[in-house]
Image 1 (spheres, rainbow, N blue to C red):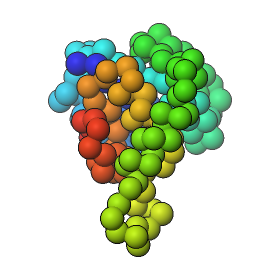
Image 2 (tube, one colour):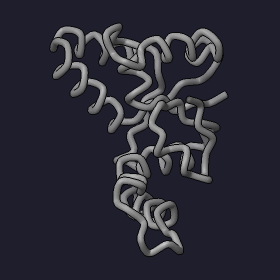
Image 3 (spheres, rainbow, N blue to C red):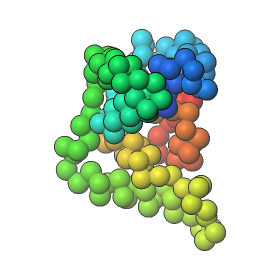
Length: 145
């Protein structure tokens, strides 16, 4: 299976003190995420992972996380995709279009989440591995959580 790994899964797996660490380890063990699948990340995910780990742990751990991602996952450079932001905007509008005019902002998928979904779709990936509940609202791609 071809999977896109989201920031919160990677960070939770790496940092033992993360509140989702046990869930990430359990998911890895039961689903064999990295050992039985082709795992992808994007530049946005790399940036988020290094940023979160660097701010919550140390620059050294962030550097190690970066090297681990580059050594073990296939990196998608979404910035090389022609019209990428326009595609993301289309996804953003599609997934946040509701008949309910009272849709609250906190219930919408963010632009970055839509970029991750768009990347997965453009590369024909089969699922996104994430603990972000907002992803569950999409009808475009499977979420493993």
